[in-house]
Image 1 (cartoon, rainbow, N blue to C red):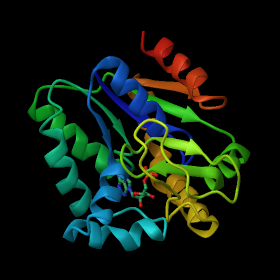
Image 2: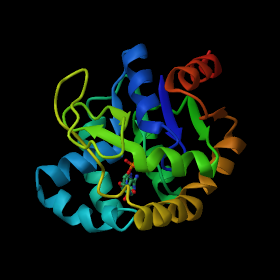
Image 3: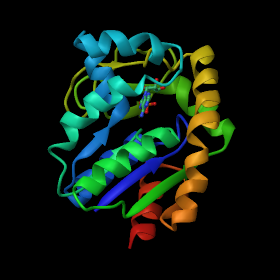
Image 4: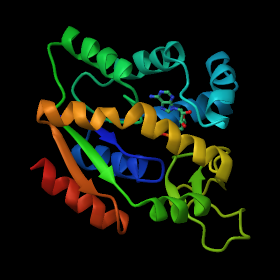
Length: 210
Ligand code: AMP
C-alpha cells in the first residue's frame, strides 16, 4: 500500500503516519523527521535546510529529493509518506518516482483540523529525540520529561514558536492546499477529521482505507 498524509501543522500527520506504518508493517517516511535528524547530526544537507525550517518556509527541492531518494530505496513494497509532497512540483516528482516502478498511490489522507486546534496543540508539543513520537506537555514548565517508550529526552521543536508557526500555516495554505484539489480530482483523496485523540483519528483513517 502507498499512502500519503496531508494536513496543516499540528493536524497529527506524523503521529498517524507512525501508527499506520506500524499497523500495516510499512515504512513510515517522515520528511520533517528526516530533516530534523539531518539538522541534529549537522550533516551538510541539514545545515542547508535549517534556516528554511526555522523560518517556516519550504526547504528547497534539491535537499528534499536527495533525502527522499535514499529513504525510498527501502520502501519499494509500500510506504506511509508524511510531509511529502508539499507542493505541486513535488507531486510531479513523486509521480515520476512511482512511474519508474510502475506503481501509483493508493490513497491520500487529508487530515482536517480547526485553526483553534492547531493553536492549542502546537505550543504544548514535545517530541522524543530518539523515536520521534509526539506528546503533549503535561505542564507548561516541565521541559525535561522523557519518552515513556524509549526513555530518551523530549524536546520542543525549534519551529513550534508562534512567529514560525504563523509562517508555516501560510506556507501550507499557499503551497500545499492546492494538492487537496489535485488528489480529489484523481479520486484518491480521503477527507478525515483530525479532531479528537490519536486513537479516534486512527480508527477513522483505518475505516477510510478499508
Ligand atoms: P513537519 O515536521 O512536516 O512539520 O516539517 C517541518 C519543516 O520541514 C517544514 O516546516 C519545512 O520547513 C520542512 N519540510 C518538511 N517537509 C518538506 C517538504 N516536502 N518540502 C519542503 N520542506 C519540507
